[in-house]
Length: 58
Image (tube, rainbow, N blue to C red; front, side, top):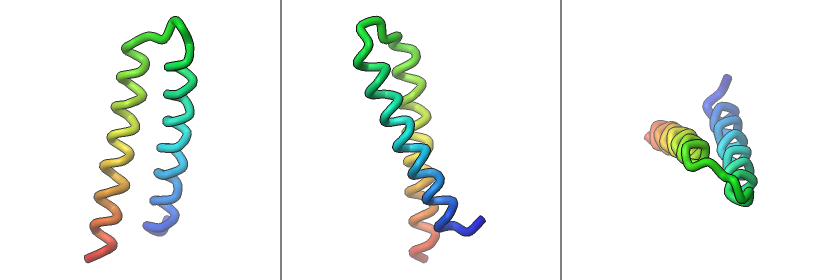
């Protein structure tokens, strides 16, 4: 898989997690653990996206 394709996949997953987070947060019975888990996964993806972008710029 090329770096561009991998980046696109990671960005898509990040967007899906953002949508999942909005859904969970809109529920009155949102569990804090679930919200924290989604945010943690989003952050890991964002870090990976930024790392790959930095590598391709060098």
